[in-house]
Image 1 (cartoon, helix red, strand yellow):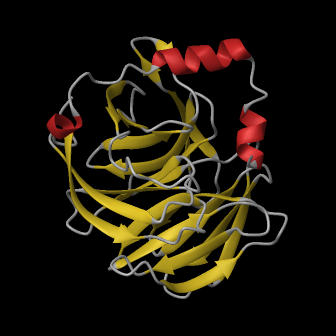
Image 2: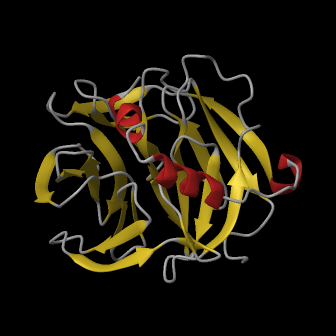
Length: 261
């Protein structure tokens, strides 16, 4: 059992039941919601926490104490082109790229690190309260999840909170929001310990759609952990999806446009 999973198992049963009951997945068949258009190899030892595609390379943040890294990966082969390890007492989390700088969260250590996107050389670090889970950018600000129903919108230069957006589905707060990706004015979010990806209005926090990817990888091995990791695909229109300790990464085309409510 991972440290994250053990911690979440301590959540009050009522809170967990509300979180699970809140997600109303579509009754449409997967073939009516998305197509899997490509499959790529992925490091089965990578505990994927954050995923970013940019400049013809895949950037990935991996977690677990003593194994956390930030890395550049060749999408086609899954080969790790360059990697930088975090200190053994740091648990890597969400990742995003803004203005040539990679931002990486840590889980309970309250520190975000930045790196040069070309060399992975360390740059600045920032402190923040609470836990760090997922991270994305709208091109101006950073957007951070922490496992609650709240998304923090942050300054990329100071990491100060500019505003907080509460995620709701028909008025019900949604928890365990994890890896994030901003796509054409919408925020896509993994729901931890599920196969669900939410499409969220980043201004209001309203959930526009819940997509169930349970059938994306039906033959996943027992060693594979939960689904986690969303990035824009190389064509700028599709998504790249994977999971923690998954030996595969998938390219997916949604049947609904990213901006369609």
